[in-house]
Image (cartoon, rainbow, N blue to C red):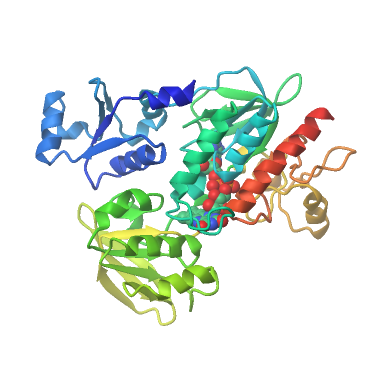
Amino acid sequence: MPAEENEARPAVTLVGDQWSPECSVLRTFLTRSEVPYTWLRPADPLGAQVLADHGLAAADTPVLIDDAGRVLRASRPRGLEPVAEWLGLHTDPGGEVYDLVVVGAGPAGMAAAVYGASEGLRTVVVERWAIGGQSGLTSRIENYLGFPDGISGADLADRARRQATKFGAELVLTRHANTLQDRAGGGFTVGFTDGGSVAGRALIIATGANTRTLHAPGVADYAGRGVYYFAALTEAPLCTGHDVYIVGGANSAGQAAIYFSECARKVVLLVRGDSLGREMSTYLIKQIDAIPTIEVRTHTEVAGAAGDTHLERLTLRDTRTGTTETADATWLFAFIGADPDTAWLGPRFLRDADGCLVTGNDIAAAGAAGAATATGAAGAAGAAEPGWPMARAPYHLETTVPGVFAAGDVRAWSARRVAGAVGEGSMAVMLVHAYLAG
Ligand SMILES: Cc1cc2nc3c(=O)[nH]c(=O)nc-3n(C[C@H](O)[C@H](O)[C@H](O)COP(=O)(O)OP(=O)(O)OC[C@H]3O[C@@H](n4cnc5c(N)ncnc54)[C@H](O)[C@@H]3O)c2cc1C
């Protein structure tokens, strides 16, 4: 099945420009999918030679070539599914109706996969990108129990993948769930953006949160060309000896600053507030204080970006006085929080004001407090908020749609930590068992 296929894949060469956003996405995807690859720039002699050997030109890049001579022109508009298929990754669910469909392969979804598959449920995980979720973006997780020396997100994701496949969970990659329907005869059907679907008797939504993007004039023009949201680990080797700007005052930004300080000449951490103390864990603040090449600039925000083919300058603004200054900058990494994307689930789900799914006892509590808001068509039209529809009480992680559970960052009032997500993904499986038995 998929794992063996993946291990038998031939070596891959990627030819693409450093400042090509499409090439940046591919490098991140290959890295996060644990595909060993060689990256060549078309302007380099070796890159030009490889292109010529295959009858290709720089205009054809980014392009993937394997040692069997297969070629894939891999521009972004075609999406990652053709790339995943070309690489031999598993992209199509094999079974007709699963006991459990998990959407999202972050820590919550992978924990659900391990517990579901190891406890007899026919389990499939659908992931729009690569295994690991937000934790896969992390250079080092130091507060997850059992890893006193820390563990990289990539290592954790690889361990989760091996553990889930060992127990027989099916991992379907590069498929983006965008519809949910009840299935005739019971259960649910999850549809994908590019067509296709998967059906299951119970469902765990573990879709976490999407990293927010920076909004300042010009910044969007340099995404993948100096401004990065998901690619810190992939881009870090290119930053050696350069100045790196990082935006954000929470743990993810702190971790990135420490990580980049190992290769960058200087790391400038831009924080809007007056200190790091408000959002960052103490252990990270202490580490940052001890690294002389990290400069923390409080009361500072990015007000603009400029450059030619890639980022060359940032406008920085003092949040107290409004005064601006220009800084030469080639590398900007933003870690400014994340928002859930639950609109695709439709109006039957109760969500909080941030769009997170409300579950269990919180459904009644949120309704009573009037704190939750229904989003989607019904909510927008001012219809009554969705409530719990059955005589029995909802299970702890069950949403307002019986049989659909939520785990991890997508759940209202979740801990927004790896350990919390893993705990909820595991617990959700116990509740799925109870639901299916009932
Ligand atoms: C840079 C960074 C560093 C962090 N460091 C730490 C740390 O040191 N310690 C700690 O405890 N926590 C840390 N966190 C927080 C931690 O990573 C998250 O709390 C955790 O990953 C949440 O897990 P999750 O499974 O709920 O969601 P996510 O990790 O967000 O995973 C959700 C997955 O669902 C997929 N998905 C979303 N929508 C769909 C869809 N419609 N169809 C298919 N797939 C979909 C996404 O692609 C993603 O892979 C960090 C976060 C970041 C961003």
